[in-house]
Length: 412
Image (cartoon, rainbow, N blue to C red; front, side, top):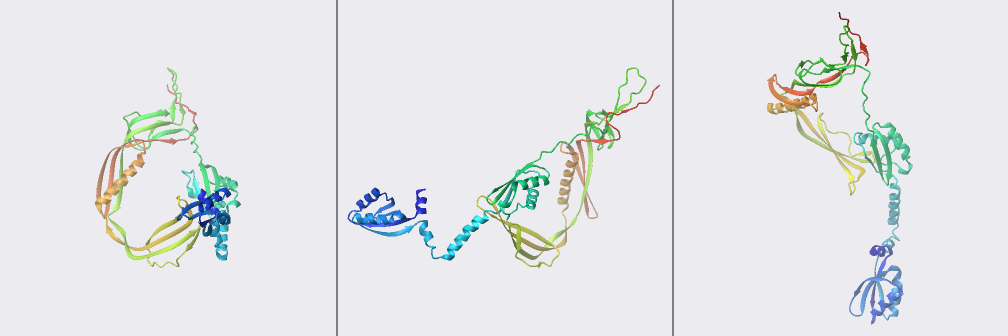
């Protein structure tokens, strides 16, 4: 810290020689002239460094001690700035640089969003840009509270937003809205029907009346849990008490057999690159692009486009709104090529298993699988036969009102 202060105040190297240089040091201490970097050069000479303001006083004290003193090296910030006294262009450049720093620090260079998980950052940044919060915007001229409220009103899925300025960085903090539970339909009656053919393993009734038992086979579309519940008649009654309508609920677990098929041609069109290539460059500053190329020169109708983005990043990982974009174009033509049957079959088997997993749901399980393949007319067809355990119960509403009593039939 002391060395920094001495640099800001400026210092001078003083060379002292004479019969009594020790007396000079004593006089400096008595007069409050601070010095450092003392170096003896023989018995009657020494060098030391004093503050720029104490240089004249040091020369006077040397004469009082019967010594001679000479000022040699000057250092520090005042000496550095003194070199610009006649360099008016450098002084003007320094003044403009300082003014630019003070002015540009009032503009937004980066916008950072945090706190979101399901709402994309691109959606938030687009809305804020519409409200004026974008790279290049003048920060003090923005009404951040109004912008936060307006953006919050327009973006679905957010419950809170705050926009804060930290110099050239705009920090956007958001909180997402917790999804509200979907209310159950308690007024419309419904049956639980089978979504696929299968043999029942377990029927769990939460509401309604089961029409099948474990071990029985059901067909797709059959009612497993009825939403029309039979009312219990009094003992020895000769009248059917009817049925009460409810919204049936429950789970129906069954062993099912699924058959899925997929096909692929054994000849495919592949890319053959012609060797014609072109690179183009563009520069994006504060969202405005400057292209360094004219019209397109690739004559082929088919080409691959690969884009590489180079973002200016400061130490610490902070990205700046200066982007250099490299775009490479590679022309190609298409040609027919045979497809390996074993590779095509492996790919189709993998896709069929993915379809089966999506079909039976995350809670379902695959008990066994078997694949078969057939080649015909240049096409490979793979068939999957699987035995699964899955929940096949699906709600199906029907006309009526929950709680309504349907009259029974008269018996004799």
